[in-house]
Length: 470
Image 1 (tube, rainbow, N blue to C red):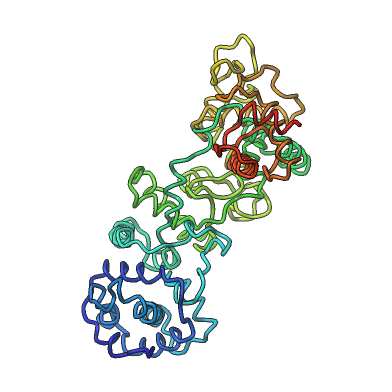
Image 2: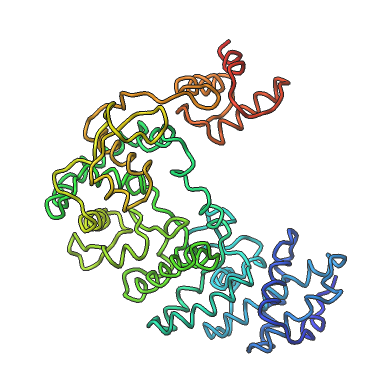
């Protein structure tokens, strides 16, 4: 089929929202002709160096030419339109007159119009991100950003910073789904502590503490916060700096601000993130973190950074992202100290006679005011207990002495570990035999049941455990 330039170039007047919607429709096509799109897009971009020209290129979304019955035409014209739009935007932003094929891929990544390059593009956080954590077309989000930029300018954010920050940014559907499934609010305390104080996290924590002991002691001396508590926070937040996140923060917090469930909170985080960039602390492409915009070794949200970050190593920067964790840990100590941490007081302890029993029929604890200060960092009983218990284990204490009740299947943790080990012996992948029935264990149970001709439930049972013990 020929590439019909007249069909594309005769398109006139299209609203921005429909332009984005059209891009969304065609970006879903699995079959593309990227070489032809590249050539045609560059050629046609010379005819649309202004906004009306872009509109002409994208006119016709509702035309029969783009109807569901015209899949072949959409397949060929879609990449032309997308690539021409990419070149138009790049010409205006970078004053480019010549673009190589390699530069084209980079250029499309910068404009979030990556579909015509034949791949998913590369986000600021890296190409290893799943699709739902890479920018996706969303007309409502784009409209929200345009209005937000006006508010940001009125609060002192320059156009240069706004252009830099939003050049790679976009709607991330994955952050919305993750916002509704936070681990500490869904797991039992037993499962949560099994993860928070796993054998690996304890062993790695002891090594990290030994490696940074002098720095941790200096931070404790200055701020008064227990060095083992600080190490435990570091361990829970980023596994001692090995899992700091690679999701672009501007995209993450702007998505959550647009989504609206906690819109005011996340718009404030977005404003602070822009202030951090404008202050020169970090360039926008390197500002990466978790799906909720938490950054660095101890996962500051932007407002925490602006209020509490510390240049502890004296190099002139409050660097929470680098290999040296000193600034990040010192900032966390500063936060806890200013939120009321009492020097020399423990977080609490396991106590069979204690009044605090977060899981029915589970262990009891006595907690202090410092436990409540830890909850100011993350408002979750499970999180605060995880920090306290991991700190104790890094210090050299043993596991909890009190047990937890059986789960809803009547299984203890030892039963669940036995089930997982049986599945491993039978050739099914459960990950680690840690006593936590997660997605891998559920999938392994389903696979076992399916191959043995049993009803597929994915749930543990005594009968299943007995069969695996044979």
